[in-house]
Length: 89
Image 1 (cartoon, rainbow, N blue to C red):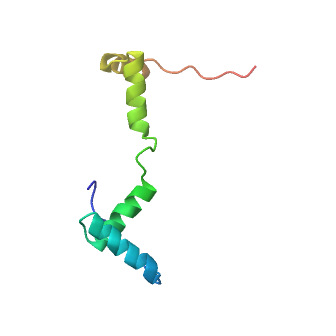
Image 2 (image 1 turned 60 degrees about the horizontal axis):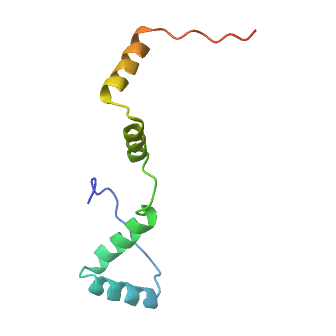
Image 3 (image 1 turned 120 degrees about the vertical axis):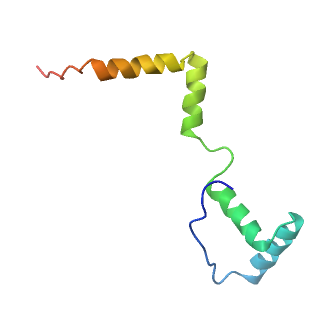
């Protein structure tokens, strides 16, 4: 499990049919009803196919051949060459 556990959730007024289905699913997956609920919520809010920006940028830099030395050179240029102000004439 990623990260620290930071929240507790109480679900009220759950239909009996939903609760039974949850318990059946939990048993089929060899986990507790609570663990089944966590898995369902996690899959709903963080699906497998979601875009992960860091991964996408990393893949893009690999495909274009960008290396750490290129990034360091850009950072050095940014730190040493002041930006020219924009002119609206």
